[in-house]
Image 1: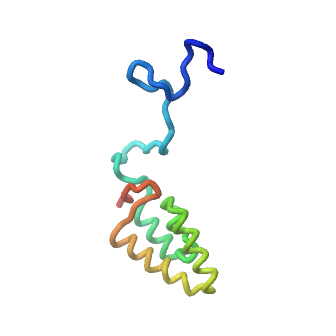
Image 2: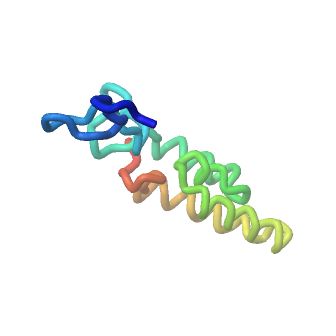
Length: 106
């Protein structure tokens, strides 16, 4: 129960929000708004070395693809890890996006 005259977090009062809404993690200082804080080199190398387990995708925040890569590798007795190798090379060459759709930094 909110006492009368009190406002809830997130309510607009005279054009501004009372509390900061946490919909996305804060962007560290020094990075542009549209660029991820994750490195494409780190993501690519992790994906090449441990791509069969989806480690590069987990690092990027793309957990859905990481889990699928892990399952494919386990079901195919390791043959599916070729997907992770190719995916890592493509991340290094073309870049990629993090889990929130922002391009990876160089």
